[in-house]
Length: 97
Image 1: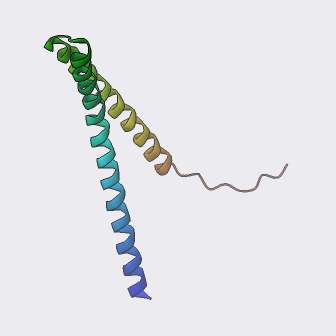
Image 2: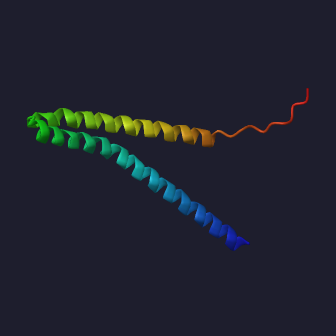
Image 3: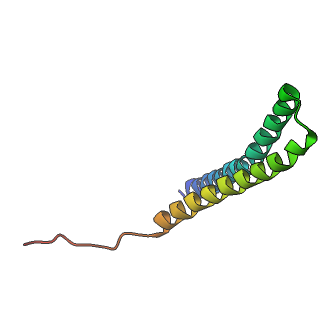
């Protein structure tokens, strides 16, 4: 019986670690993808329409802004999820009219 409890505890711990790794990976991707997409768009515009290299500067800043906005929304969603998880329903009894 005690062995099963240890295995359950270990499995729960490993699940928490895996969940944290997924969140960390998602946060990293949410930082890098908007920036990479804007840089790719600048590269495309430079090749297609022969724009100068100056187009990379606003593209970089737009990508950076998009990265921070996406990461901030991700952070807010996780905080809201944690608040819901931490907020426990009070013990209630049946209400009789």
